[in-house]
Image 1: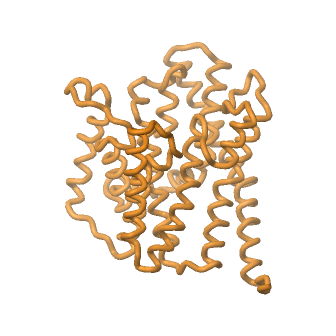
Image 2: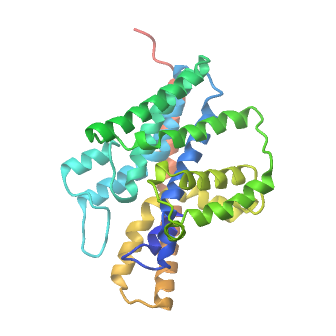
Length: 325
């Protein structure tokens, strides 16, 4: 969804422009729901003790940090004219990215994801003490306070505060799924995707004079990814296709593909600026091939070895704990 939106957006224009209409942001919403769900489903069943928290931190750091930091430092260190990396030019911008405070371009989502990992640790701590409602209530209060401060004082806190409710939706789904969640009216849920898809378009909204709110607060732009997630979770037709081998492979390399695709799309369109249906199609196909090929290379030869090494450090620490002072 994100790659389609960026390929269609100006100045690239490799796909019809309507395909860039909030499509990428809804893809990010879907990713945040998935993140909340997976953290809840994978970790909240475990007790909140040092060994489990260390394993959680190692898994998250090993999966997210290495390739992201490589892209960040490469963007800051090298800016050849033919390679369009991310605009990270100053030491301040480098620090904001490296410390996961704020990101530019598509990198904006990674600091939010890492900030959520800290929030999830708090929710996990609350859940194992039977205080899950208190933890969720605290997060909702933080988000409401964020709204008030933005409106009243013009304060701009970390972007996570605008997306907490999306992560919380995923966390709650993870808990419900673990307890044996069942879905009522599945056909109605699949059918609802059609009107939600239409209403997520600004063209349709303008025609019926319905305003378009920010993605993180627009009911339709939140409901559409949420429905997609539920349909995929229960493998409702045709979403069972997402479990096929090619789609699982795309899922495996999706993180590095997300980080690589925009520089590759931008570089390819600058190297081959000619326009036209066939040239745009060739540039898009070549860009996707390079993106997915490089993502596979990165996953196998860079991300996986580093992730396993980081996880092994925690395993050795658990097997041979350091004596207390």
